[in-house]
Length: 304
Ligand code: CP
Ligand code: NVA
View (cartoon, rainbow, N blue to C red):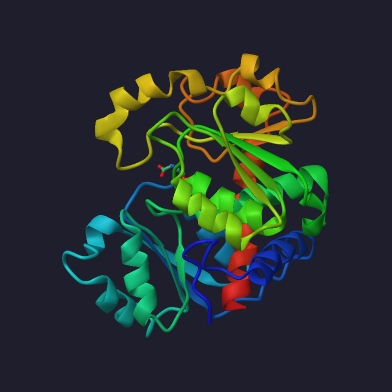
């Protein structure tokens, strides 16, 4: 039994298996694969893509999903994460949780007899990273996950949960991960050294300038400057991040074939222009749709 709390905690063969399975299930649907199985989704934060893709993937595989909102459950307030997991593992076959604090997932995983799946925490968004890599595979080596080794993903913006999961998955699959963040918002250098040491096939490059990051990129990626839970820092963040917008001027510095990715939801005109999302290089909506296939690969691997 495996949990899926972060890419770092997940062995590389399992990550490859999830991606290969996503591709396989997309081509050859298995509408009874998870028949009789139930997933419960616990959401402490808002969600469109994650919720719909997990529920949708369960249905496509013949299983059942139910969602509960954090306010109803009171994780850590009304009941401890451990007791929630102890109750649920007698009733369901896997638990997906979107949490304020990554530690909640760890506490559930420490006692749960069914897989705990991270549907976004302050630290990581590993399910998103699977869909992002799947989108790059579709673009640059259709059907062949191994074929994207050697490609470069450039992330411009906050060294946040999404950036961390991308850094690790790129390292594991042999991609170069360039990241350019404003001072004070970078990935922790000690964490980067640790990740790079464990996955020598890829490389993480901390860039000083957004242009330096995108110059040799195959994909240019951005995310909100103000993640859920950081709303009180909004004004300061918008000031600090102003020159980190993905716009035409920056995209002109990237190779002609480079695609544009964003995990969504986007603030159009802030971290990315409307043209960036809607333009010919954008794969942003394909990327969102790929959440469904990625979730099928993930759930089939953990529950199948
Ligand atoms: N990208 C993503 O996780 O979207 P939601 O927050 O809508 O689930
Ligand atoms: N970094 C963003 C991702 C949303 C999908 C957040 O945590 O709000």
